Amino acid sequence: MPGLADALAGPVLDVAPRLLGATLRNGDVAIRLTEVEAYDGQDDPGSHAYNGMTGRNAVMFGPAGRLYVYFTYGMHYCCNAVCGPEGRASAVLLRAGEVVDGIDVARGRRPGSTDRDLARGPARLCRALGIDRSHNGADLATGEPTLTLGEPPDDVSTGPRVGLRLAADRPWRFWVTGDATVSVYRPAAVRKRRPTGRGLGSSV
DNA sequence: CCCGTGATTCTCT
DNA sequence: GAGAATCACGGGC
Image (cartoon, rainbow, N blue to C red):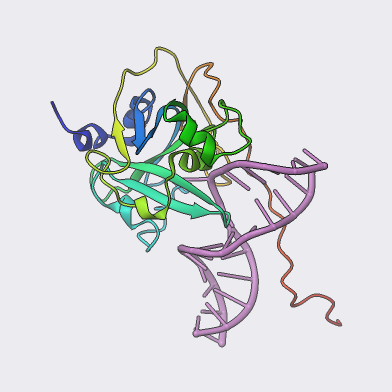
C-alpha cells in the first residue's frame, strides 16, 4: 500500500478532489473533509508561493504530505496539505468538514457554534481541531495531525475559490455536492484602508 | 452590511 | 531598517 506522500505527489488539481472524504485527525477530534481548494505554486497568482519561497511559505516547497499552517487576519489559522512534486510548492487548503469524532472537544473549542458550523470554514476547521502554528510542517502520514484518505464522494462540485482577488476565476474549489458543512461562498472583500495617522489633513 | 486583528511581505530609504 | 499595504476569515448587526 503506497504511502500518503505518494498519493499527494500528483498534480494538485488531481489530488484536491481526492481529499474529499478523507479524515483529518488531531488528538481526540476527527473531521471528514467536505470542501477543499487547490493552489498551484506555478503560474497561480492566488498562491502564497507565487512570488517564491519566504519564511512563511517554506513548507510548501518541501515534500508532499506535510501540513502548511499560516496565520491570517490577525486571528485565524488555516491549514493546507502540501501536494505535487517537491519544489512545485502546490497545496490544498482544507476549507471545511464534518466532525466525526471528538465532537465534545470540538464544541468546547468553538463555544456557541452549532454542530454544523464547527468546521465550516478554514479557520473554524483549524480551531475545532486545535491546529495552530506549532503544527506547521507536520508529517500528515505519521504526525499530529494525521490525514487518512477515504472513499471519495459520488458527487463533487467545483467552482471559484473563496476570498481571492487574484485569479478568482479559476474553478479550483471542490466540495461534496449538497453537504451541509460546506462553507458559505464569500467573494473577495474590498478592504477599507486602515487610517495611518500620517498624510491626512496636510495643507496643500 | 461592517470591521477587528496582527503577522507577513513589499517597497523605498 | 522603517513604514505601509495586504490578507486563502469570522462574527456581529
